[in-house]
Image (cartoon, rainbow, N blue to C red; front, side, top):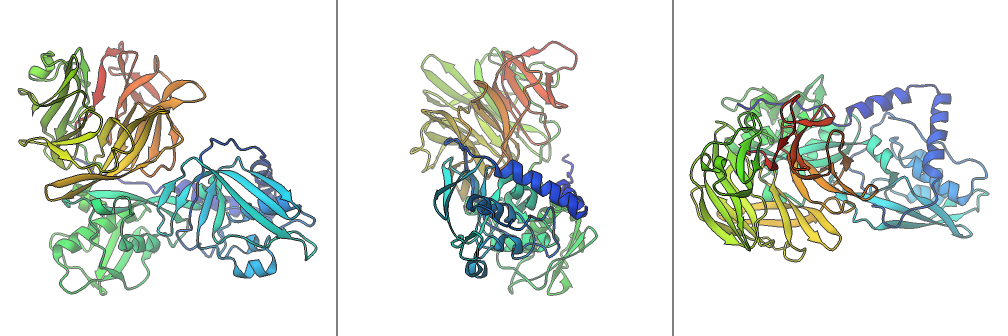
Length: 594
């Protein structure tokens, strides 16, 4: 059985802290603003290899001010100080950014639009006066967020922008601001919240997260519903279904307490199946904003769907959990080519547990409803030849394909099938009871050889490590299914600043765990990163005897790594042995059935 999990809205602690700061005395606001200005505006050097980010305003700012309001221009400010003050003022949540406009000339202030694009840059930026009244900004670019709230990570290039200023009024003011906002990354993280818009996988059996970034405030529920109706991001649009595509909002989404009322209009002929699907999308999406229940209306009247309550919650759609994972799907690993279970360290049932196949990697599919383990696949290498073996878990495995190499097999929750990459370039899909099929991956060949390929728990995305001259690079693509025609499209880099990636797994359907090189320490360390490239975070190495070489991750499971030939679990902020209080267990190639 899979229990529904309540999601806490991301960014809520930030919003609370900002509101508390805003409530303090003006003197306190002034001191904090001065400190921030000194820390963030005083940097003068920018490494050329630093990542960069651009972002667009995705929701209308709330009427009430949130957070710390910036200071207006000081008398006698230099051109560089005016530019830095303008950047600080762009972080305001006040409607129309009145303080930011004070750094502009009168004509520019009246024509500048703050609702077009938000460019997010790193804090290590520099401003340099190249000529009288001309200031050049150089900064690490973090990424872009379009008007739908979709983030695209920067490609690692340096962001530059030239500002022209005039002192005709006796004070320097910017006369040529580009439309949109220019924000430091911490200010963007404070002002915008990351939330998920949920769409449906092609089977209608799971919702699929599509990260969005919305300005903090009471308008978020309405903004999120509008973005659901507008549809998924370009990156995954071909791999998901949007049952809300033809709906229209009749009125603003109203939230009372923890219940939202959503009144929609649908075209004639809209089926109950579509109404059911869009109900799940709305409930799962709004749950991420702290909305615990949704009253969904059709032209002001209840939907009247059989077996669906008038006021719905995530519990009513627990079966569509994108991160469903059966309790019985315990982790497995290999010891001298034999399959073992992490629950007791003992061998798995059947011949695979005896080591007869000499496996170097393996995967097992799991039914998220019954919890039973089904299709198993493993890779066996003999000299220059690698074989892909398959069969039922606990039963005999038989060769189904040979080549020079296979990536570690991978599975996903909705389907009993195994995927791998043959010889680094040919993606292969093996359905239970069927023959191996080549999967079209049009963008793979141009990138290089794949050393790792892992399906997301919902089966809609694939994380791929591509070997490059600089080491492994992480890409994420979309799995597109049209009857029996399956492809992997739009492979895109999601962590361009991370090099020497050796392995990747899925913490959940929206977050990846990565083993990659740490340039500062010359070692391999674990990271987590959002599926869109946001929130790259280093994971602790505490407790590990050495560098991790492979990992296993899955929803509601403790991450596993192999290090120095032994296996370790991440628990309580550090890595511990599989069996508490006992010696490390020898093993390699860990995985979780999905």
